[in-house]
Length: 145
Image (tube, rainbow, N blue to C red; front, side, top):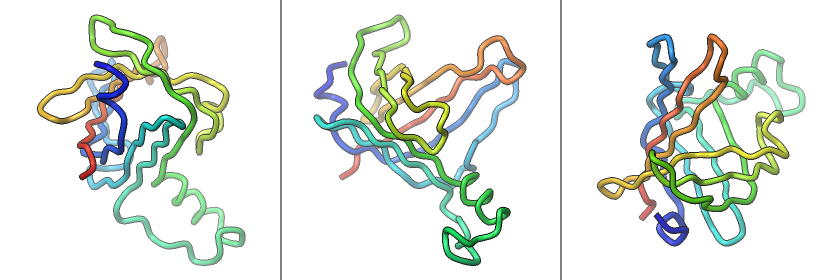
């Protein structure tokens, strides 16, 4: 897969995590909205639950419980990106994270293995190897019209 094949905006279809112990989860549920966009200027990803409740006050004065609920129902990060090459599982895309709701990713690289099938973009990643939370994340995206 070439960089030109990936360019553009893709809408989220599904996000599932498969744990090494056999569990599966949907981090933000199965009713999602959001997109990932790849451009010449960088990449941006945002995913959220579709039923996010509004905060009971302003973003600065809301209760801690409201803020936790907002954080727990939304995910986003942005930065540069590049196609690193091919692996036995697909094309490796490196996301150079500059900004993230999850600050631990900032300044790092998030690698995704990409495949294109039936007009859908499949991105997979591996997290927390060697821990009880070791898992593979699988995200499916449909090109935005």
